[in-house]
Image (cartoon, rainbow, N blue to C red; front, side, top):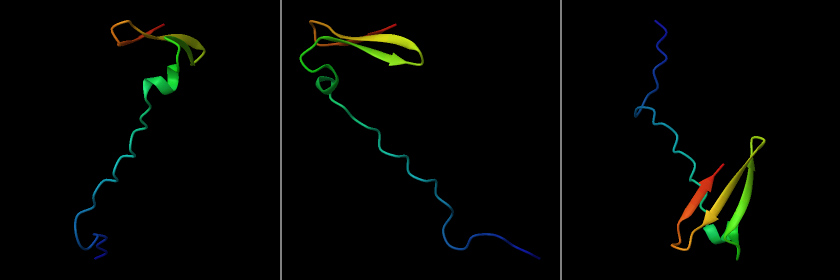
Length: 57
């Protein structure tokens, strides 16, 4: 009989790659708004006076 089991511990799934992290200031700089081009569309990322981010199409 041809048994192809792996000896030792059970196979473990690969760890996911760490997510990239950017500060919003790295994107916006001193501006409060920027345009992001994605898939032929434009999206607007805006920083509000309350310090929140809004992404709109």
